[in-house]
Image (cartoon, rainbow, N blue to C red; front, side):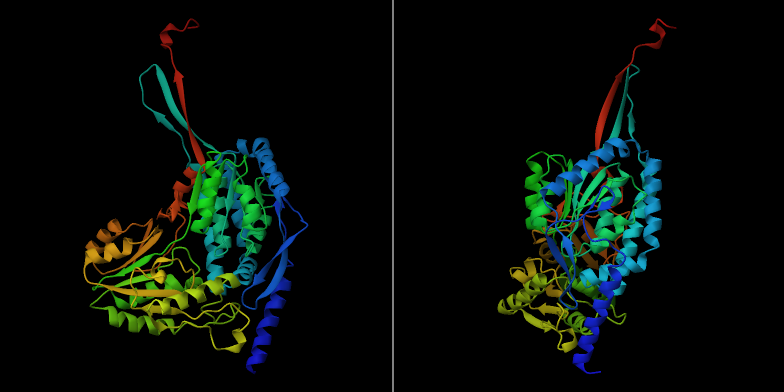
Length: 508
């Protein structure tokens, strides 16, 4: 088969997959348990062939008002009275429905984002695991009785906010949906969620599979652009709590909007996360962490380990091994099981990443591997960028400071432990960090000294629903995942009950 024929085959395979996928999902906002339409639309595009999958209705301010009002109606009517046992049961039933549709959700996620089938399946399964976790811990929620004197009974109640607004990104649509809805519903809230306009399909299908499980209106999804419907949602006076995952710039706007009405926020924003490779590290392990940490999902990951700091004694050998590993990736059709790296999710990000590669060259860094687009004409329609790495980088370069959000690694060297920690912490971000070492002392010491909300030792990941996830500094505030996330969706009420001496009760 010629290269042009291969290109045509990929295009036809994806068009056929679009048709099959759209047989299972209703495309439109999900309000009060039903799919709605809207006058204007925004296309979601398949990044492997740069063609629209489907036109998605774009909500307006009236739709936001309706969704929020519907959520409050559901909260007041039924959900506020749902016991932890009931909420746990409903979440478990939703998990069962999702588990029956893993293949379907995997395909939607791959088509919408460009993730390989393996990546998409892992993230769908991660989403299901997250919801299963919140179904299990829902029943463990308690208040607290505070010991006082015999004349006072003092206790606390943890109560939901009522209706919460949530905004998820385009790089992990299914998983982020579970990260937001799981703890919010477990805590007893109703939710209005806005997925990214670039990748809404898996989220829509997930909530549609909750039909008949949650009361209508408990879960609502608004489609459209963040600059319009997203802004309307986070600014809405009746949204009592906001949770946002996305860029630092937009997160600041969300925080300002919530501050205007004193609404609490959870923000999971960007990162420029270091991986510190100490001289005693197993280099195969370190290379795996560095490659997985920046090339997984084509580098479109907020906690990407995109700055490798390597001790000078092992720097050159590490670079040689890393280049070999980068060259081993197979760029191709995400629907092909042999593909190990797919395209970037949208054209805007594709251009941004290519511009940063040019910036790295102009700043004087050495391009060690990659830097271009694949020369296979069969991939010419997609947003593909080669696995890339720069050496000769210093911390003042933009490629070492800015979040690129693509498959671009930077490699620097250090001499001492103190220099490594200083370089690692010399960033406005603090989402994640990595450590490669065979020393327990170094692992625990560096984990304490690194300014990051998540620290990975001798690997990139895993991410478990039990572990709180969030960052320091400009990487955000609050936490997703873990029992801590449930607390972010509840507020504490303290109750003072004054008691008389029972012996003085006139009825006794």
